[in-house]
Length: 165
Image (cartoon, rainbow, N blue to C red; front, side):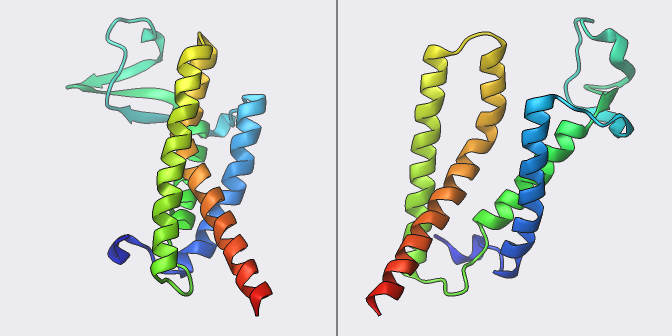
């Protein structure tokens, strides 16, 4: 893996301090559907409803864009989760070597395979609104699976090296 694309090691701890609360908030949002009232805001949208199905939420229109009134709780949690997850996943380790680079690559490949196998199963077995929910969660699964597998294999290899000594 190209070392230039990795963040410095100090971003890993920052990423964990962002990722853990965002994960907890995401689980709360997914299970309760809670949206903070104070996070209602006028936001710019690239695509808006031209058919008028949701015309009551439209405020202004200009060009291909639109301004809508929306609750940004889910957006905020998703953005914070992605920033934290990317920092954790793509920060250098203390001792970055060929083994770590190979482990990163294999974990990334493994996470993509698992993600798309899960997606294929969802295409075959899940329908309706449940499928939409799965597609939303699917945006995050490659990153989650990568972080879990990379850190698990790294922990196992570090532990086995310590046991050998």
